[in-house]
Amino acid sequence: MCEERDMRFTKMQGIGNDYVYVNCFEETVADPAAVARFVSDRHFGIGSDGLILIGPSGTADCRMDMYNMDGSRGVMCGNGVRCVGKYAYDHGLVPGDRRSLTVETLAGVKTIEFTVEEKNGRFTARLLTVDMGEARLTSELPEPINVDGRDYSFVGISVGNPHAVYFMDSIDDLRLDRIGPSFEMHPRFQPDRVNTEFIQLVDRNHIRMRVWERGSGETWACGTGATASAAAAILMGYTEDEVEVELRGGKLRIRLDRESGHLFMTGPAVEVFRGDIDIPENL
Image (cartoon, rainbow, N blue to C red; front, side, top):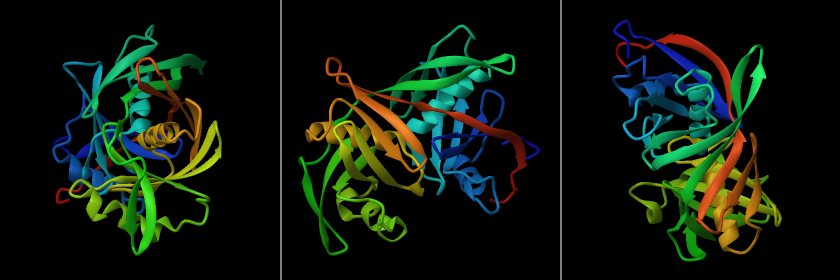
């Protein structure tokens, strides 16, 4: 945090998955966990799914540090890293002739490719594709589980952070505000907890998804969750190698490259507004 306790920020969102971004090439955030809890509050703060710090890196063009709305540290965020890529290009952290960049995360260095468009006399990154790396199976295929007295089965997938993917006939009537915590906090996933995706198969190229993110609750989108869900659907033989994932906030396209084993996520990133906020002395 600045000595004056005044923090400049940029609000960004990727298909409704919104975070507060701070340029730590210029700013210092002394207690990011506390700041994340404060700015995420949609009544008394800015309102977001968490806080993402963009700073210098020794191995990439920039570094991304992510904090959930409850202050817990996140390993990786697919929608968040796309927004970091857009921020880095739009705000001149990389040269304007570049069409790709790298971002250091706790899940490794991610490469982002993007298209550029001219808007109001300036160039801006528009559609971004992230190399999400390989998915790793962390369960049986599938694994049975009992949650609150009901039997389910899930596919455990890690894409740098842990996911449990549940395939269901319909996801529209799920009361995630009631059942989400039981899935997140289930003893099977302790001590780290888990991100939980509920998937409805539409056809072999299209799935629908709702997500309960650890530390944040139900969000409108989750890029790593979409990647994990597509990977699970492909592994189970339910879909082709390229899948449209429809979330509450919009759509992402996930593609598996069989040769490398890497998954590629394509979607938009949007800057909502910029501002500054006074951070209370005693958070």
